[in-house]
Length: 349
Image (cartoon, rainbow, N blue to C red):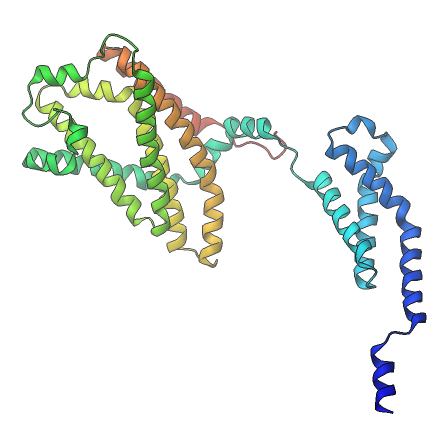
C-alpha cells in the first residue's frame, strides 16, 4: 500500500503529459505567424536592411512586439515548454532593442558630444570646477611664496630632472635660452608625445584620486601648482616673468585647464560620496561617474591639443606677443565653448 501511494505521487500520468504538450502546441500554432513576422522584421533591421521591410510590416512592428511580449507573459504563467520560453525571451529582447534601443552610432555620439554634450557636462560640475580652480591658485601662491622666502624650497618641490638648470640664482642668459626654440621641428614629435603622456598621467591621477573623498586630489593639485609657482618665481626673479608666462601660456591655458577639469571631476565624485543625501553611497558614485565620464573624454581631447601646442607651436614661435596671442586665443575659445554651447536636445543625434 505505501509503495502504491509513492508511485502515484511521483509519476506523472501519461495523459497529463499529453495534455500539456497539446496545450503548448496549440498556443504556438495560434501565435506563431506573428512571431515569425516579427522575427523577419527584426532580422532585417539588425542587418541594416530596412529597405527590405514593406510599409505594412514597419507600421505593424510596435503591435507585433506587444503581442509577442504578451505571449511571453502568458507562456511564463502557464509554464509552457522551455524551448518556447527561450525563443520568445530572445525575440522580445531583440525587438525591444530595435524599437526602444539607442539609435546613435559612434559618429552620432561624437557629433552630440562636441555639439553641446561636453560643455553641458562641464556646466553640471561648475561648483567642483570653482573649488579646483581655487585650490590650484592657492597651490601656485604657496610655491611662489615658499621659494621667495627660502630658495631651498625649490629643490624640495621641483625634481632635479625637471629643473634642468632652471634653478634659483641661474644666469639670466641661460634661463632665456631655455625659452627659445632650437630652430627646427626635428625631435618635436617625440617631445610632444612625451609631454602628452606625462600630463595625461597627472590628469588621470587627479581624477582617480577623487574616489578617496577627493582629499588626495586636492593634495595633488596643490603640489602640481606649487611646483609651477616655484618655477615661475625663478624666472620672475631673473626678470623673465613675462617671457616665461608667454612661453607657458601657449599650451598652458589648455593643459592646465584640462588638469583643472580632471581635478574637478575627481572632486565631484568625492563630494558625492561624502554627501550622498538620501541616496546610498554606491548610487551617488554611479550617478557622479556617469556625469564625469563625459568630462574625462573631453579632458583627453584637451590633452591631445595641449601636446600638439607644446610640441610645435610653443617651440616654433619665439615672439612673446605671439605666444600670448596663441595662449589667449585658446583660453577665450575654451571659455566661450564651455559657457555658450547649448545643451543638446534628446532628439539630436
